[in-house]
Length: 568
Image (cartoon, rainbow, N blue to C red; front, side, top):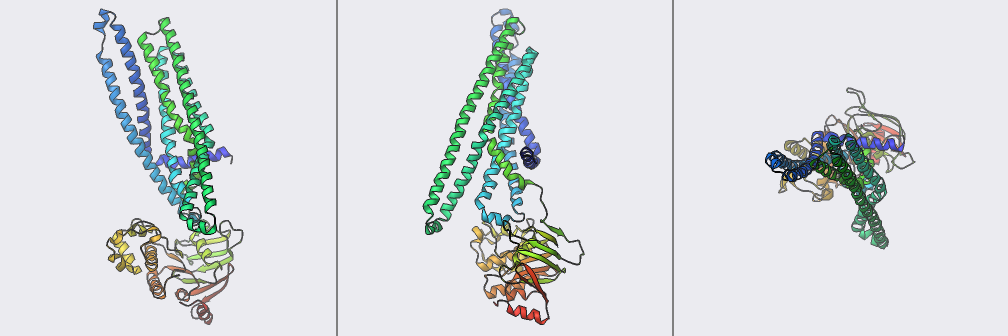
């Protein structure tokens, strides 16, 4: 695929959800913007015609008494009121529509980050992804407000000017229409191409400046201990200098663009003035019509000048489109994971599976084959680095397999870390099910053994948590994660060391609740702890990314392997 084809594909991926979110409001915004421009042109043109015609009519008594001043003045008032109303409506509709679209795109983008591998990317590059969610989405506002709407309004202005002067002289109207479109859109295209590089540099500069500032503030202790504080400050100053250089280039280009549009407007006015003057001299039109044509041509260039800002932002907008397009594609299923047919004999079926972590050329899993029956409880045991967590990630769809096949029921993965957000306790729970009411939330908390603690909080479910769940103890955080797991209506639970770092009493309580609430669900537990493996009906022993043994409960080998695991 060529670069231009890829760019247009990216643009389609972004425009499709952009335009589909509020199509009627976006269309009405464009219509009102065009109506505002056309009403302004008609108001100025009619006012000029009326003033000129009134002055000429007053030169003779006969025409002074017969001249109708009421209809033109009524038209002027109507256009003035209509222009004010359409301007207000245009601002209200376009901004409301654009804000609604951007909010929907943020939700879509955030859901795109919830796809496989997103947690690892977020941990590695949090500032970059935050920049995508904020500045890149905001840059798409220019696509509508500063490019599409002004371009449509400018085209409407060119058509009106061409039609008005076309009634005076067909060739003049056509020439003015072609000139306005060619000069107005042509200058915008030229400016956009010239501004692309500095606009992209400015975007990169802002991103770099923010990231380095966050690193300096958040990691100042580590930087001082490593002796890198001065180097980080120098890098921050260099990023600021690059940003200033890009800003200077854009400011210069904006000045040049303004001058170019002024020259184009002047040339348009001079050309139309000479043309209507010649028509008046030939007697083809009168002085009022000449004033009308001249003023309409004067105002026809103003909407094209509004494209200047959009053209300057086009490079930044196009960069945002290229960045966001991959996450705007339709939602995909878990990569490499085929769904299990209802009533199948296996809840999980792995055949000759191999997998590796992103960016690593070393396979973490090699030729793994495993079958788990519905309702069975299996524990993956082995030393750290044996591939247990990787296997769970592949089944959950977090890592795409390099080879082999994976068939699994819909699953929920409980990782070693408890991921909580700076939000209310209720909204942290509703990440599992956005439609869950308070009754279901309290039932889940009761099953997880956290209902009593939450009731003791003054705000209850509305208790605000700090970043990372600040305000809860380690045990409470783990129980909250368990409650969130209980809200997920899936038949397969993937548990990665669910009680690691908990004291023995809390860990045993959590495990008892897990075993009770699991019911007929299938459990696959990755662990090196005896208390967690004791839940299993079968132990699957792993070593260096391979399965080396499968031991069923009741056999001496099962008991020996269980006793060899780390105690509480």
